[in-house]
Amino acid sequence: MTRPALMPDSDLSKVLYPPIEPFVTDFLNVSSVHTIAFEQSGNPDGEPVLVIHGGPGGGSQPSYRQYFDPSFYHIIQFDQRGCGRSIPHASVENNTTWNLIADIEMIRSKLDINKWIVFGGSWGSTLGLLYSQSHPDRVTSLVLRGIFLHTKEELNWFYGGGAGRFWPKEWNDFIKEIPKSERQDLILAYNKRLFSGDVNSQTHFAQLWAAWENRMAAMAGDRTNAIPPGRYSLAFSRIENHYFINDGFLRENNQILRDMHKILHIKGYIVHGRYDMICPPIAAYKLMESWPTCNLDILPTAGHALSEEPIAHQLVKIMDSLANKKEP
Image 1 (cartoon, rainbow, N blue to C red):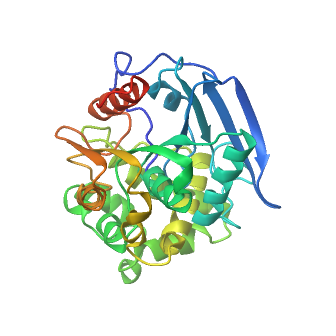
Image 2: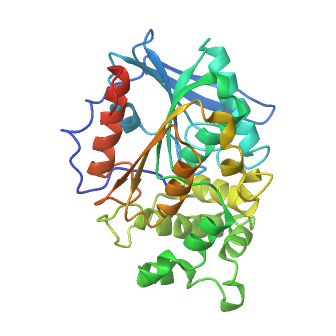
């Protein structure tokens, strides 16, 4: 789900690799409507790893490159349809899970990559699992964080008041501009406003939607009234809401767990914060039960954000272990 921006009080310089620049940035026309941005960094002859950002609609970040040894890994990341540098901005036309899976395959084919490691968190874990189940012969390992299986139960938790029981003020900020008569379905209520046709109103409600999620991201994060930027919020909130109101375009509620038999041969590594308010750890536990070849690390002092030090440390440790061919 959420965008894993660096928290203001985080100092990850001792955990992450130093910042690097991509050696290629490019665009790929994936349909008559959409052009997606992608980049390559690290070692062009190294082990390929695909980085899948969250949201949907979150966009990739330069800091994502720092989770990988750039001398070993060929790091590929892209902005999914409608977000980041991809165009058209905030568009939900022809924007579905299955479109994104097809886009990933177009990138892999363009770069002439046979197989790659898939690395993703939150919605990135959702898309990574669904891509792997669709193309199980193209994935060597899955490294996932903050598991989101895109079920009704998970959405009901976050948009039905579950997390709000722990953070009542922040929950009230999220719901107070929605009439009480519409609060039984906040995803639908926000959908009406995010797609109202009034740009100023859309941006306002987009910022409220994004702020609720951002405030819940880290266990010890900043929960002040900082409002996310309007342009970012518009893409993030419209696209995320579009996916949620359409049940992720999945064929059934527990589709990911149903189809785990397709990827039992793929080694998996799951990192999840014990106090993840956005994606509670039960999803990671259910996934582990369906996936005997995975390792699950539930971290006792972390929430949801990629940038929390315990999460970042464990993910770098896993990627270093894969580079050294050792178990983390």
